[in-house]
Length: 344
Image (cartoon, rainbow, N blue to C red):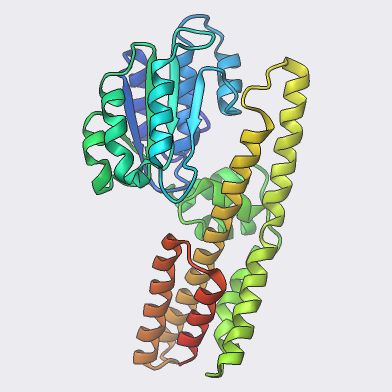
């Protein structure tokens, strides 16, 4: 089974556990790791292995599962800020139905660390699913709401991918050394983020613009508003490479449908995923900007060119803005407030 997991990088321990799990699978698995560590890709590949228990057509199962189009693979993404009770009820109903074409069904539920009050609804289905149903649950962390469910699963840990591994992968994919190094160092261990940055001609310019934005601040509210508009414009401009990738995926979907006659979940599901990815991109861009600001301030601390109290206030403001991102804030107000606090 080693070839099945060849596209998983930086996760040797997880791959060993996945290979072993396919030999004698249990009803429920919990993949725990930070965003960008590759848990979703691993879940698709693991599902392909589970679904290949009868006809020995690994290529087909892997192709359809990787495209999230396999008839016996159900992927549940949260509809809002949290996994809702309605989604939990749908998962329970889906778990009780028979597979469509084989004798196994795999249900992948993403962002389960955001389960909140819906957790108890899933517990019995995860504990005692039908023999044909397997759960693969994905979470960034084991939150307090997830502890009981986690205790019923075989847990597989994923880690942030080391920058060196990301750099090596990008170079293997044809990215030049300088760009690969820059992208891997600011991708926060995320393979998806590293690829986006490596394909983005404007990424370095945006990093530099964030690093230098404090030079535009003079303590006035109007000046802070202009600086906020500038960085928000930079974030808007960052969507280009991902939108190009989305266009390629839509074209590939249409080509697969024409070639194999297997539409699966189809264009609507793909477009829903694209919307989530664009929302995530904006969050990643803010985090990159905050990192650039923090790095610039720490360099000034090292060079002794900034007052220590001002540096502490600025770093605290950046940390607060980063934490606020989790609450889906008004981006303009958040950015204006940060610029004001940095200009004090």
